[in-house]
Image 1 (cartoon, rainbow, N blue to C red):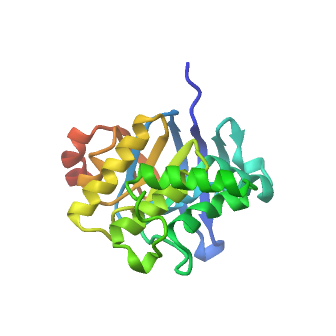
Image 2 (image 1 turned 120 degrees about the horizontal axis):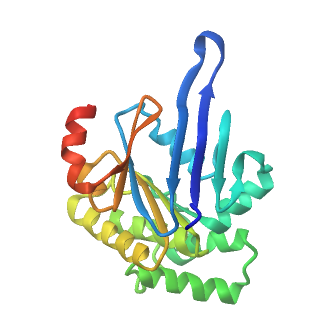
Length: 240
């Protein structure tokens, strides 16, 4: 039996205390296998962002256990978590978070600098990653010389350059037009076909339908973790 890459066991996340206490997640149990392509959906305030932060090792549970690649994240120190984020997880956000003074190639090289990769290998791997996202001819352009879609492609190249186990995307198409959204989603599908696990947080049904499985949250709990793209329309109507 395949060991899950991501496993939540009775995860709770509480912010504040006393009268200001907020249960962002409540007894969440969830498994995502290596090589899956999943979307996380739910209404505003359902816990999507908290789940994303937890999966990405950006936050720790208040209670319960989170296993990522067979390690219990709740028990790891900050340095180990930083290593996991750099080596095993690639992040793509709605805002591209590119450094404006750097070229596309230099932006993509940043995670490798933090990982201690030598300059020759950084150059080769950044060029390879940019070629994968269709920007092999734009490596010396700075962000202000690129369209929004091209900037998101640079961000994706940066996310995959350390060859992570997981690509974690938070509303990756939220700032893009329809045509550019389709291009970015095609890149995700191509990356997934190479074996990378993709988890995407989105509020857009058409975007979620490109994934294999949809996990629906409401009020900090999993309502359905095996929702198919075909069933999404009826689920959206019922849960909302």
